[in-house]
Image (cartoon, rainbow, N blue to C red; front, side, top):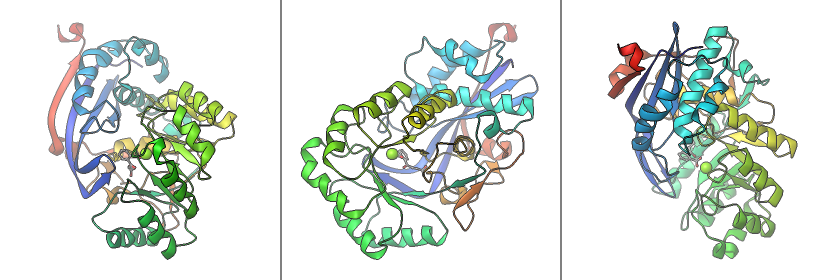
Amino acid sequence: MKVEAITLREIHMPLVHFFETSFGRTYSRRILLVTLHCEGVNGWGECVAGEDPFYTDEWSETAWPTLKRYLGPAILGQELASAADCLPLFSRIRGHRMAKAAVENALWDADAKQKKLPLWKLLGGTRREIPCGVSIGIQDSVEQLLEKIEIELAAGYRRIKIKVKPGWDINVLGRVRSRWPEILLSCDANSAYRLDDLEHLRQFDNFNLLMIEQPLWNDDLYYHAQLQRQIKTAVCLDESIRHARDATAALETGACRIINIKVGRVGGFSEARKVHDVCHKHDIPVWCGGMLESGIGRAHNIALSTIENFRRPVDVSSSKRYWKEDIIEPEVMVSPQGFITVNEAPGTGYRVREDLIERFTVRKEIVKTGMAHA
Ligand code: OSB
Ligand code: MG
C-alpha cells in the first residue's frame, strides 16, 4: 500500500439535538476527514477531536496542522505492508493521538478495500451483532430527559447512559430509577467530581448502575483507585486511558472494573486492540465509546466493536440520532432489538457520500510529496 496523496477536509454538520456534558454543550460538529489516495483506492478516516480542548487537549485546530505538517508527510510515498506500519513513522510525534488515529484508521480502510475484506475481519473481529446503547446528554429539565429515555427504550436500545454533573446527578438518577427499576443504566461524569466528593459519590451506589464513567480528573488513575475501593459501583475509565500501558496500570492498581475504548483517544486501531487485549487478559470487559462521529468514524467504531472482549453495549447508535443526513450510505441503523448487524461487504460496508461531503466542506487541502508536485 502506497499513499500517493492525502486530502484533508473540515466539514460542518449540525446535530439534530444539542449534546451537553459536564464540560459544555455542542450544537454543531466541526469534523476533520482524512482521505488517503492509495493506488486506485481511497481510505477514509475521521479525526474525533472536539471543537474545543475540553474532552482532551487535542481539538480541531491542533489536528489540522499536525496532520498537514507531520503525519501526512511521514507516510506519503512510503511502501506500507500493513496499516500498523505507520506507527514507527509516527513515533517521533508526541501525543496527538486523535490525529494519528484518523490516518491509521484510514490506512486500515484502504487495506481492507485493497484486500477486498471486511474491515471487521481484518481487525480480527468475530461478533456479527453488536448490542447498542445510547449516551443521553444533560437536558434543560428532568422531564425532557425522561421523555428522551422513553424514546430510546422504545427504539430498542439495550443500555441507557446519562451524563451527570454536580446538581444533575442523584436527583436525576433517582427519578430515572423509580420510573425504570430494571433497565441497564449507567452514567458518565466526564471528570466532574473530586475525591473530596466521596460521600456524595457513595450515593451513586443506590441506583444499581452498570458503571460510573470517569468520575474524577481526566488524567488520573491514582485517585480513581482510591475511589473504587470505597464505592460499590464499578468505575469505568474513559479519558484516563490513553494507551495499553495506562490500561495495565489502571487494572493492576484497581482504578476501574471496566474500560471504555475510543479508537481516537488511544491513537488508532492497533492501540485499541492492545487495550482490548490487556483487558481481556485481566478478564475486564470493554465497550466502544462514541465521540458524536459522522458515519465514517461510526463505521470504524462498528468494526472495532466486533472484537471478542467488547462485552457491554456500545455508545454507537443510529445515524439519525445525530444527523439529518449522514455522509455514508446506508446510514447506520439499529434494529428494534437494539443491535447493529455487520455484513461481509469489503471495507466498512458503508459507501462514503462524497457529494454530500463536498457540500459540508468548509476547508480542504491536498497534501502531496514534493516529488509528486514536480
Ligand atoms: O465521554 O463518552 C464521552 C461525546 C463527546 C465527548 C465525550 C463523550 C461523548 C459521548 C457521546 O458520551 C457518545 C456518542 O457518540 O453518542
Ligand atoms: Mg465518557
